[in-house]
Image 1 (spheres, one colour):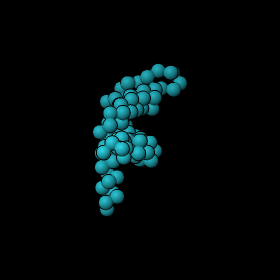
Image 2 (image 1 turned 90 degrees about the vertical axis):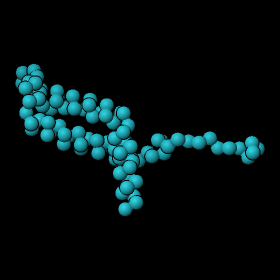
Image 3 (image 1 turned 135 degrees about the vertical axis):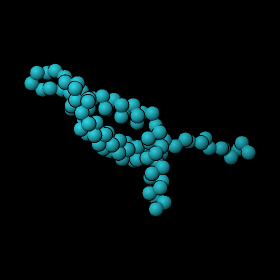
Image 4 (image 1 turned 45 degrees about the vertical axis):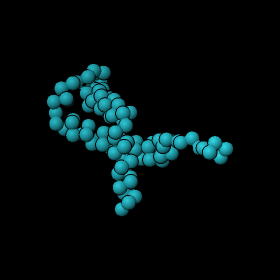
Length: 94
């Protein structure tokens, strides 16, 4: 149980990190443009998909999947990169 709570705290710290939200916003824009609004044969964009509920639900699931995936790929394996390193005191400076 302790490991779960520490993992959840790490995940909440990940959500508080600004690049996470920048990635979510940029990912949402590209999802709307490339996955929903782009019409292939005519090479145009149909922005009326913004008014459909299914588009927003699919975007929410897509962003949830991407956020959790990036957490486990980039954030979780490197906890030492985020820790602050305290300078070590030398023995002669007591």
